[in-house]
Image 1 (tube, one colour):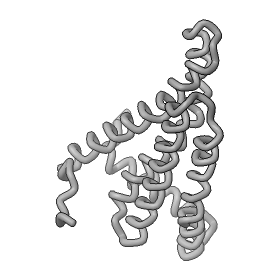
Image 2 (spheres, one colour):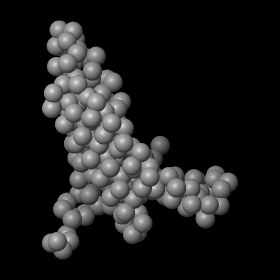
Image 3 (cartoon, helix red, strand yellow):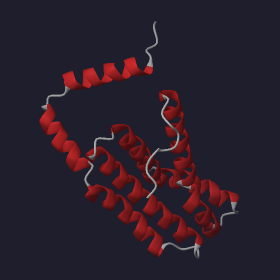
Length: 164
């Protein structure tokens, strides 16, 4: 059995998706536009902002959730801006970061019971830790994945742009 290279696999999946989808291409574009609207990015960040305002744990836990909210909003809006300006590769990178931030909700639910046990059944110290541990490793992994993909493509690891 032959293993497909990454570009061959991508062409196969794109071709198959285009052939198997019953929705015309023009309507699919409209559906994607509504999916990646700025409103969607704002809704993602709203939950984190509400959590940061009402979170227990002094300044540590609310600070973690507030930074998460800003990272989620920033990455989703930047990804949307990039796709609207035709920068597909940059869009994929920013949406990967956005997904990593949003996946923090899942990671929180995985870490919290373990941290409660590690802290002798105490909730508050575990909550302070999990406010940061839920999303920082996810974002670090996403950034590592993005930089590894850039290196494989031969793209620069740092954006070459004009200094503002």
